[in-house]
Length: 231
Image (tube, rainbow, N blue to C red; front, side, top):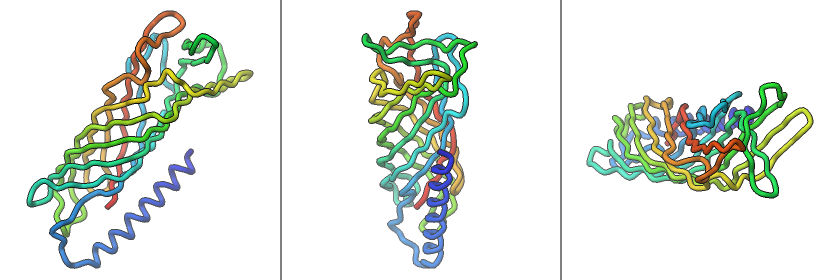
């Protein structure tokens, strides 16, 4: 996973450098310029509203990339609506073990004395981001401040529960996951580096999902990290 992240960052930073050099050579200001056609982000993923006794462990990370079409809405072109299409990979490490049985999926906290290597949920998501964009850019200034607030809708096309213990391995597609996910987003920063946060507005799991002890859980996600925008 680390090699994938490094490879993606190297590719996009290299692409950003090449495009920037072309822009410097272009001395004619484009009055119809647009901003930020590509994005790539790295986040730390947090599960909110966890059942009693459940905690996160290891690094629950996310990788997000895609393209956004910029639609300026004023004459200065420093305000715009952005509509895009993207892909998101997310992992959530914790101690809520999921087991698939003949009567459904059961969820229970892993005992403190039970040794295990990893326990996680992993999702692959296709996303539709919609943003209101404000920036201090001009047709000839490629380093600027930005604040992008918006809404993101995602569809989980693959959601896997995985447990690896000393003597047991479990892996299956988890049908209890809410396939449709949506939430609020905010990106703000200067030039390439931008703080990013996503707040999920609906549960990661379907209604009435509960632990073996009968506790219903309604976990939603918060993702905090960095977003890189590339022309």
